[in-house]
Image 1 (cartoon, helix red, strand yellow):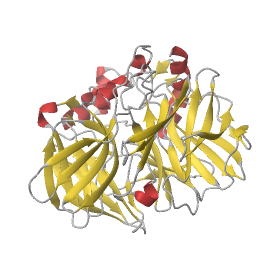
Image 2: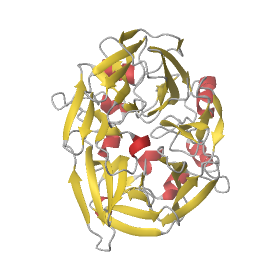
Image 3: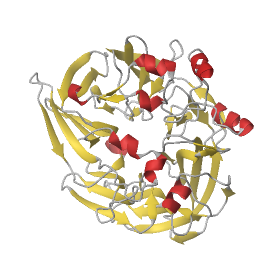
Image 4: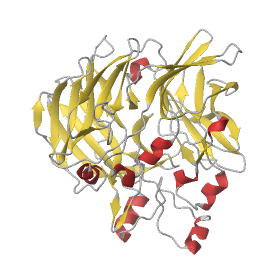
Length: 473
């Protein structure tokens, strides 16, 4: 476990550009495009170290496929936080759970000059013709998908200051619209739903006033509704203003208030319903759809927010660490007026960072397969160590596991012209903690067995989310 933590949560030694990675097995000939993943590139700046998995300076990793060959490039995200850290040898910007070392005077002056990180390390996505490195802060960085160079900041709003956003915008591929959730902190804070039209124009769909805003990493969408699951992990906004603690440590778990589902009409922004259920926490919505008077929401749920504490790096060094299990759950919300909510567990397997054939099946009730990270039941201690494929109709699952191998989020790529939902491949980056390097792993999505792997000659730190761009050659 110690070596794994040093490799997976340490620092990247080199930026590389390799035209032809060594391939074991075989890469599908039809696979042409680029898989780009975002995540931390270092948890160390000079003598200082970041405290949490969600901290660090961002690094992009690009794997490009052509005629069975794989090329690779990695690059630190060019931003103010990175540049100042390199110039001073110190952590310069406040992160998720790490603040720069500051005197009381500097903490007071920070109220008027807040240095919130622009190291957008969590996700990468395309909005209209912009390729964006996404962060939960107000700073989204546009990048060139070929060179991985930064092109400047992208804003969802210009009239009002945006404070935090989710890192998972939702897409309606039938209309070309993209939706994003922004939280603005004030004496009375607001959740603001933003629509980005195919021509790039942005508009506010609607907003929800809130006294104690919740920590929100994603949200849901069906054909007619935007769904905000407001967990009872909440903050008094002035605490964020005064920055007496790192960002996430200002939030408190208030289980008695339960979890609220806010249902907003996608088209007129009106609140179609407010439904309260027992408290739970989640990072990731999976899918949502409507059936008659029911709104059905699939989400990766935890009983509380203790999973966040498990990701402190000093906790990850504990060889007896057991991560809380996230479970794939389905919530059925009766929109007819009864206010009833039914809860169903779709699998008893641990799953995190869930993915499916989003482009084809988002908001579709007929989707069947969800892929994700998990913890092997026979190897319970330690970090996420297996991949999982859940059949939500049969509630059966398939797994990929190997000793001392630590995969990251699996991304499904459909085979061109496919008619079967799992006709394609699943790609992920795996850290081999025994041999000290990482590799791109390609699984057949149907059988969930390995097709091939492309080896990188150094460890790739444990990262978060990635996207396949078929147009980026």
